[in-house]
Every structure is written in structure tokens, then in C-alpha cells.
Length: 266
Image (tube, rainbow, N blue to C red; front, side):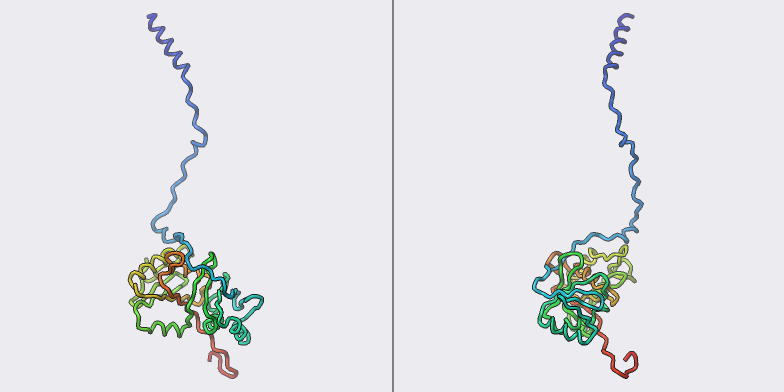
């Protein structure tokens, strides 16, 4: 009996000497965050990030800054819809390289006279990307020139039809299908252009039409020029590495000047 008491006392002392385990910090009591309520359907509205690719911005060119129907070149302002301004601008850009600097609010329909002057007089035309130091050398074609290009006997005839709801990738043998057979090849996602998917689609077309060296961007006339510039990034697989060597840019044919005494619309 005495031995049992001694053993019991030893056990009590051992327990009393054991260090107490520290309490968990209060932060550990914070509940885990709720899972994100997302489904595969929601992926249609998410745009994958895409690096901006293009050519280095050329240095020895004239910078033409767009502002609606007017443009700024150095200290001079021009309104290309005015015949006298067209003549002055034509002389300023004659045989010179030009870099177009778009603003956020200039639409393609407002640039037809400007682009016609540049096509006739400038030695080369570049379009600056609005978000990064990249630029794109363009071959300008009006609607008639575009139809002539389509009529050429050559495989491919690839074009990017830029619509409000996305990009339609079209070739001489038909359209590259997208997620919706009745919609564009690359739909807008969450109100944003999907440049990553556009780039992937153009890579596939290049694999199919290996001998095609040119592609045309055909923006709707209500497209902002800045958005058209962003689309051109999708033509590049990497900086300075376009899928197609020649970038053709389609612009609206300028309205014919009104003739005195002619009925409206003629």
C-alpha cells in the first residue's frame, strides 16, 4: 500500500512538471475562405493575358497624332476632310515615313481621307500600339483595293474581320469556326478583345497556309483605330516575328466631294 502511494505521488509530480502546450494564435481560428463560385461556362467571359508583340517603334518618321477628324503633325493641325488641308498634308508627308498615333476616341470612319493621303504620298505608314512601345507597318488599301486583292489568284487570302462582337478569321476556303458556329471565330470576352486566342487561331491558319505571306485586317468602320492597333498584336508570335510578313489594313473609301447642284447622295 505504501508503495502505491509513492508511485501515485511520483505521477502527480511528473504531470505537474510537464510544460503546458501554448495556445493556438487567434488567427488560426479564422475560417477558410469560401470557394469561388465559378463554372466552365464562366470561362467564356475571361480573357487570358497576352503580351503585346510588334516591331520596334521607328525613329526617323513623322508622328501624326489623331484627334477625331483632325490630326496634329509637329506644330501644325490639319483637317483632312478639307481639300486645302489635304493638299498641305500631302506635301508634308511626301516620300516620308509616317507613324500614326491613335487616341482613344478616333474611329476608322473618321480617318478615310487621312489614310487616302498617306497611301498616295507617304513612303511608309506605321501604326503605334496605344499601350506599349510597339508599331506595325501597314499596306493601306481602300475598299476597291481590297476587292482587287481578294480577286487575285493566290491561296489563303487570310483576313481578320474585326467586329464589335469579336474577330472573324476568314480564308479562301471559309471561316475558322469559333465556339458558336453563328458567331465570330474569336468572340469578345467580358467586353475585351481576346488577343491570346486570336494569336492562337492565326498560328493555326499559318500552319495550314504555309505559303501565305500577307493578311488583311478589316475593321468595321465604327471601330476605334486604337482597338485596331491592339488587334495587330495578335498577328505576332513573338516580338519582331509576325506570322505573315505583310499587314494589309483596309479603310473606308473617302466620300466623293459634293458637286454643286447635284442631288443629295450623288
